Amino acid sequence: MGKYDDIIDLPHHVSEKRPHMSVADRAAQFAPFAALTGYGDAIDEAARPTDKKVEQGESSLEELDEKLASLAARISERPRISVTCFRPDDRKEGGTYVTFSGALKKIEQTTRRLVFEDGTSVCADDISAISEED
Image (cartoon, rainbow, N blue to C red):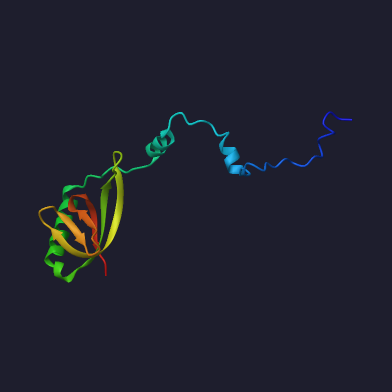
């Protein structure tokens, strides 16, 4: 006869006063204590990749200026263009290259910004490529 034979077949006790705890809640009470709150987020942020802004050569800048002048002359036609530009990251050094497509609404000469019909605004100094869509 075993040491616990008298209780081994008894039904599992269910409290009448307290609700049943879910498995997830039960596991959470044994989770390790996070002494450094936000440390995991900081590690994830540091590991997030960013690109460096590529400085363009003189000939590329001249070509972009010519395209901008051509677009400015035809702005009333609302030309459809695709613009690849560098967007600086708000939290760390570097950024990403993104492409915007749409109808060009205006070119603000004082701020050197291209404004699309959907409200998207792109700084001309951050543009690396412009192409017209058919």
